[in-house]
Image 1 (cartoon, one colour):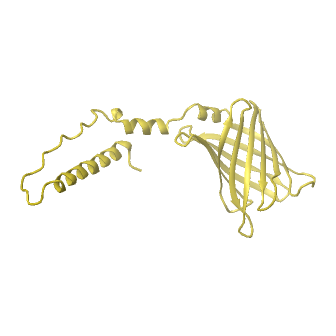
Image 2 (image 1 turned 120 degrees about the vertical axis):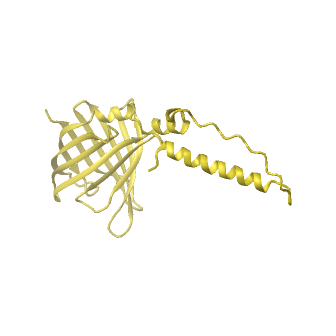
Image 3 (image 1 turned 90 degrees about the horizontal axis):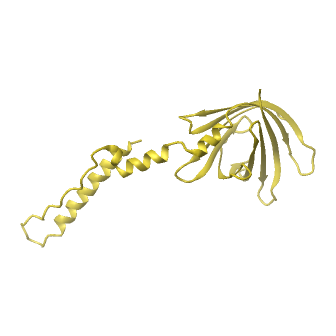
Length: 215
């Protein structure tokens, strides 16, 4: 990816070329008189004075939302309940989750290992806050599938709850819509609920997971 300074320089060059072309074609036909030169825009004395540079630096810098994620870093024990059919009893599982801030404290990396009714399961996730879109973002992959679940959503400060929405492909080619509700109950407890809705069917609770910080 180009740096903000080189990108600004490239855009400035294109602007100068465009100005020159307009000046040439604006001359009357047959005229040999050169068009009056236009004063070139004054470049910022320092890269940090360039508005584009300033905008880029602001967009890539961690903020209060990223500090909020950092509070969830650490080792967690996991108790899971899975609901495979409406009205059926829950199937339970256990595991561990290691959450680590990575890439300059911009993202929360999640690594899960545990047991489930379908056998051992491992998963990797990334959670972040996109300064440009103003939305929370997430991705998840595990040994229960071969796809990558991406989601976006919002955070409610009063209830300390994230609500994320995504979509994933299921066998047969259809798509299942998902809604994740995660509440940071206290410094040592996180409650995560996943809801899913198959095509033509109402939304139902698919999983309820309790994270307890390891001491």
